[in-house]
Image 1 (cartoon, rainbow, N blue to C red):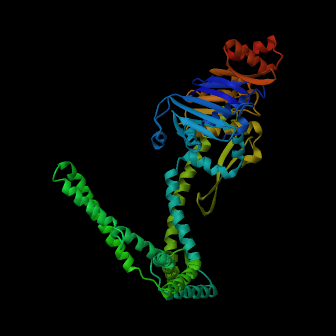
Image 2 (cartoon, rainbow, N blue to C red):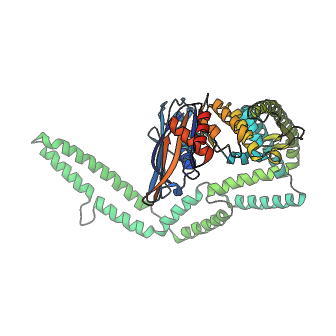
Length: 549
């Protein structure tokens, strides 16, 4: 669970330390006080996108640090080389230049890697989730998350991908007669052109190297001649080999008088032999250097021919030869395409049946899950003061696609006697908030995330329905840590921990503070929520009754 949140220079929050507890944590405050900023800060340490606009005016960076306790030993830690600690610390710095620095237990991680950890620590449910419920394209994903059918979906997807690949191959080979003839003529011309050149792998590199030698033959010859004289000597000079030989013989003579020169003489002797070896190789290279303008012209002509082929078929001779093999294979496929397509079509029936069978197994699992989901959502909605609502998952069989052969839409009827209709056409704002809460609660039971955050999901709810929502969140908080931003006194009254978000102006700057409330503070805050800024004895008395004090 999230135990501590430290915020620096996020919007109007200059510095704040917020302690959260187990159970039901409520955040209240006037509109614009900064409640959403606290949620934004939490999102930042979960790896969500962060913007430069979040940084407080006049500063060059913002930072958020979160301390999570009782963190399970998730596979994420080992996979990303981060030391596991049940008290995990996440720290993120956001800079004006757009740079982000994220650390988990002191180890640097990327934002994307941090996000993969964040979704395993906290689930955030906000008003935007209502829009996702309206969108029927999301309903199948909701059902699959509840069904936990990943193995079945993976098995189906493997078969569907094989089917799709087979269909693409058949389509590729199924071309009209005119196009087939044109393609075969093109391939034959290309094959003949490449084969006529009689290319060898690496030939272009060898020719270019030989051309370089021929183009610089005179310089090479002169250089080798000078090198030979330096090593062997000329008519008037001694070469390095002769000088080294003389030097080592002199040291050998001196070694008769003292052993101190023996090692030097041996080393010099080795050098002499090495120089003699080099001298012989240089002389052989000089003697073997041959060149002619005719050879250079032949090489230039051959490279021109290769260059024309390279412009059409590949950057090197190796690439051109690879294209030749590919062209031959394609020509064979087209030549015998009819027979090959028939074989593929006979295989297609088998693969298609396998995919349809896998889709049927997946559909059966989804339909069973849909019944359980409907039952649990109806039970949740009854607890949220919607006892007469009807809810169902409507299936439509569609052509096989990556998600299977099903389209799923949530239907409901909010009032007795009304026919079931698509969710977006029948639910009011308050009803939708409760439906969303019911669904989120049902789905939350499927995962191990310890903390749930509800950001003003009570919008449009009031009266008895608000009381039911508050009681439901309180029950959820018995097994998970719940953080809730709200404007409803019913929710605030049931909190285990109540945090007040307030702002004030000092010397022309706005500052937001977060204050944990004691019982008297909670009473006054509830009175403000009930009656506005004009707190009276009546509203205070109502607050006392709601708090049972």
